[in-house]
Image (tube, rainbow, N blue to C red):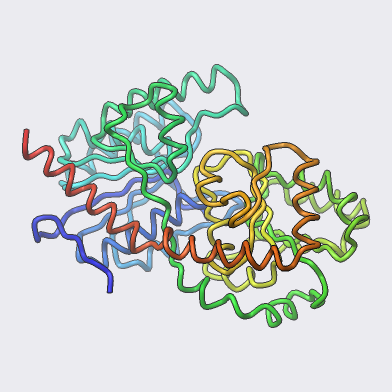
Length: 399
């Protein structure tokens, strides 16, 4: 039976702020947090910008969660001086109207504006979660410098900075964002039960997808967009299919690259080896994972790869690019295989090794399932967050 953590035996007013509720890891994490805190009896409000984009929207789930949802139209994803000033003013106004005990921000844009608004409104507890840093090696130095400066400023406007992986803390501190005592790791939680209960439906799912029992399926769950590594898999597809003709690529997700990727698959004559599901609601993802023999996640930028955790919960071993928090999920040689980002030879070799070694897939999958079930339960995440709020409150009361 799970523990219940309530600060000082009172109901808290908790406001979460996120830039947009598209289908994505940070958004799913935030909604699970809101749902969990609402179930514990707290007064929860979620403030979000418009949820626009080909990735799909989580607004229907948020609206059915029983907590308050406010859409602030000026809170948009891309920098916009006029809209950003308006968003800051609106967030500050909402903080004063709602009078929250805690403001918890998520994502970079909402994190910068939301922390400033909450801090200047004298909200007692202000925390921020880094799901993934906005500065990284794959954009210009000028852009990185701007984001680092903004994140340094925002770190002075909150009490604690929560990271979904230790790697996020290290990277932030290396760029002088925040102070070491501000950082706490809380692994990104998820509703694990649907994944655990779906794991034995392999034959049924394969029939629905039209996949023969003897095929070896490599699954990828990611938006079809830059830095997710789909092009790397396309680059090694010809050699993989030559060495192992039974391979099937099962790609779950949609995005701006969909049309271009399909054109490349068709021109290469690989149509019978690729299944692109398009956009799949998060609640249906557990039903598709049992079709996989391995999960291949060649993403160049991840806070914590939630898709890999989801696969592990169903006993699917992972091949993952070793960046950010990936090695805190995929333990090389224990729950999967880590590959140097962009090393196509290593990627190809790892895929073929698992494709040809069913006992190894089974061992890695069993180990991963045990790790994921113990570390990534959403209930554990929510309890840890409540403990952090309590700690901040206690530290402030002691001043």
